[in-house]
Image 1 (tube, rainbow, N blue to C red):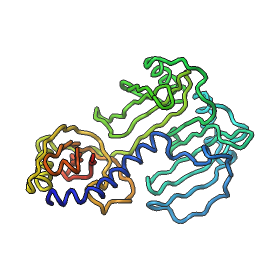
Image 2: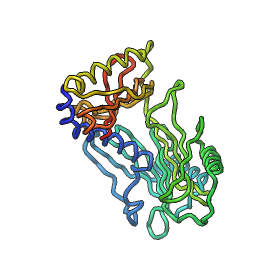
Image 3: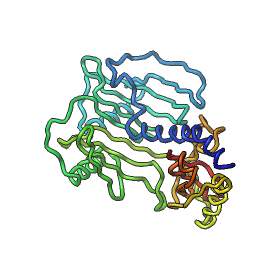
Image 4: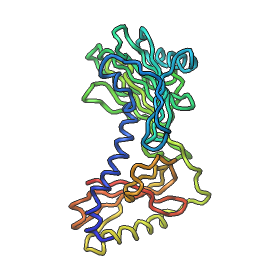
Length: 316
């Protein structure tokens, strides 16, 4: 493929990359949250009989406390541990997300006016995925230090039955105030790309949201591909993209990580169900010459098992 052909493909590539980025961003920020929770009074739907589950198909079923007492009890424990307001009533549902190929349960706390004050979501194993409060605003202009916010977040997570390890990344949130605290997930000492536990702590010390992103992983190859072999794969691909047409490139960074295969360089995979993450070499390449007018950075995922390019990303 020539550099010109590569640049012509950039819109499709960027679409695929953006899809992956948005999916992660939504998961981290609680993007699965029911629209009624922020838009107005909750209307309890009838039990739904939807199309058979599959890619892109979302099925929803109402859950009652008598049907799933353990779910409602777990949600109540999380609500109390996080310091969220107890609702006048509660509403539950089960969701099958065909696009993400996942199932989750959620319980909303509903106030006397019919508005959701908080929501908690749990994966198929019962672990907390997302919790967020919609009531109130920070009650004080006083600002916690970054260290105090991280300690508050870790202590509150522990009380909710969630454990985190490693150093926390703490960032000031200039939009809503307070702090965003992140713990990256690792497996066998290697980063799982995009997986993390994140907490937003208001400036008065109360937790506003918790999110946990964790993908299933394939077994690591018995003998992972070496860095030199991975770079050879990238060199062959980038020579085909850039060098033959007069553009150039330079390798910026190479790291072994767990990554999710995506459609960045294969449009036929657009809309496919999410696959388990694989161990891969993540290689950042900076184009130069004409190609740099369309792409500032290209990231390739090279499967550490078979050496194939299984996705990546493009920064315009």
